[in-house]
Length: 308
Ligand code: ADP
Image 1 (cartoon, rainbow, N blue to C red):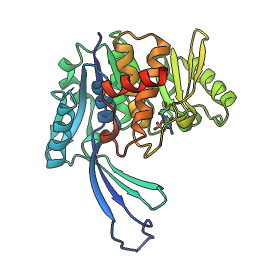
Image 2: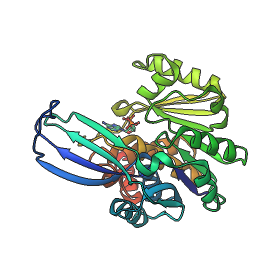
Image 3: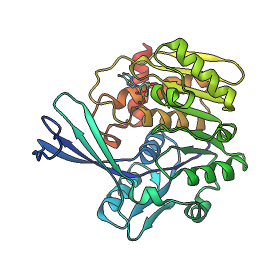
């Protein structure tokens, strides 16, 4: 069994449920406010640990109550937190999420400590990066830090999974350092400049990404499933499981963490894809970010029931 390090963001999601989102200048009352641990990095670490992997989180929080709650939540999910720095004079990352009566949401991210994670912090956390064989990265830490991680750890032979979310166009020279790119349809469109509405268009986008230097790519397609392509020319399309959707928050993060856990324990490709699809299908059946990420036992039961 190989182990996993996630280098990325930790946020407290402050979710306000409202009837109608406020207009400029308007003050409104929330129907309900919830505080839910989130941040793409932390979500993926929790997904990997709950899927059964040994997972370590590398990142930063502020010296405040939110940071303490996020760290405690990671530990209770089985994620190692010794590589998370506690920074003075800056807040823990926050996401202010407004969900209106028809389920539309708008989000303001206040990066806080995530936004100042730098190369020196990565050096400080280096001893927690010796053992893990797989490293997972996203775009919620500063780009120069991400580039530093890629250059340092690709050279050491680590298997790098890059989830370019939220979408931004990275420099062309990073693709050859990425073993596996996992991205959704929107991100695939932003990174390639081609439309990704049909499966043929997703196929073309996949080809562009492989030609840029990625060895494998997975484009997640929400309720439509996923598309896989490797630089050796193999392709696969897998449908999503049919479930009752409550909230799709963290579907992609659950997929990334669960897939990493599956390959860390040596599952073959198709089985790993099916496992991650099941974990993320279960995640959309309940609300919130880390609150919705399933445990291994529940994924195994779901798969056994689906397989009958
Ligand atoms: P993101 O959250 O990054 O936008 P997606 O929406 O593509 O990611 O979802 C990631 C994966 O989660 C999908 O490939 C699929 O396996 C699963 N998933 C997402 N939405 C649904 C859904 N409505 N029903 C079943 N599975 C889903």
